[in-house]
Amino acid sequence: MFVFAACVALATLWQRMSGLPSTGVIPDFPLNAGEGMALFALFSVISRIGDDTLLSRADLLIIAAVGMAFALPSLKAASIPILIVSIMFIARRDPRVASIGQLLLALVSYRVLGKLIFDLIAPVILPIETIIVEKMLLPFGNFTRLGSEIISPSGFTIFIELPCSAFHNITVVTLIWLGLIKIVKLEFTPSDWWALAAMVGATIILNTVRIALMAQSEEMWEYWHNGHGVAIASTVILVSILIISVLFHTRTPRTSIGAVC
Image (cartoon, rainbow, N blue to C red; front, side, top):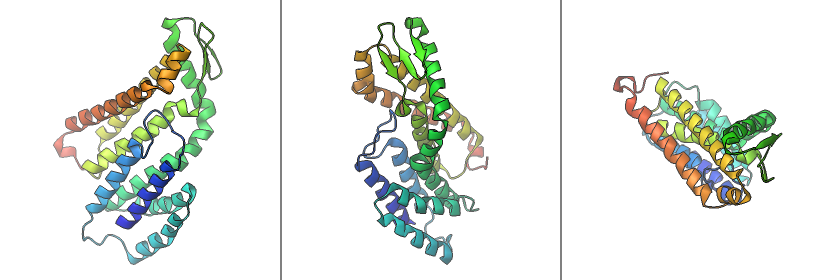
């Protein structure tokens, strides 16, 4: 499993270094925070298997066979073995094996399945996000909305495109959330889901504030879209979700840790 996980990490790293475009505010190169956390958690969970025999010979043969796809320089090809192994493991009774399946499914969903889903829902999500930004800007002047465009009183216009959506940052936040959980424990508790909801809410609010700032003027757009504002926004989002994670973890009763949700 360490070899398979190493192939997953190398495939992910190779794709990131090949120049794939950024998918949100949270930095992407060489690995974004979500992928890095999930991969670290993956190796952490695998290390807990130790000398226990949890995989059958058939499991190992399937993993070896589908792992041949890692030799192809393609994200889609690498996603096939990750998806197959995640499906094999995700319903296993041993929490270590099930956790490996969950992490693999989250990783492949982030780069492939999540993008496909977002392409389908984008026509609905983007106008909603634009309306939220418009409402937030009401106290700051006569901003108007046209489809996915926000027009300032001066005539400066921003167009909310797919990379600007909070959805991309939410997928990164979900990876970070799952990685943090699996590093500490193997099974979910009810507070974990409340923590995820709080992280998602904070991400949406902060991302919306960033877009509202960009809509003020061309100078503000340049600062928050291409300048130091990107680092500020990403740092604030990361710090916020880490604080939320710590708060929910410290409030989780010790007796409930490890209980099945």
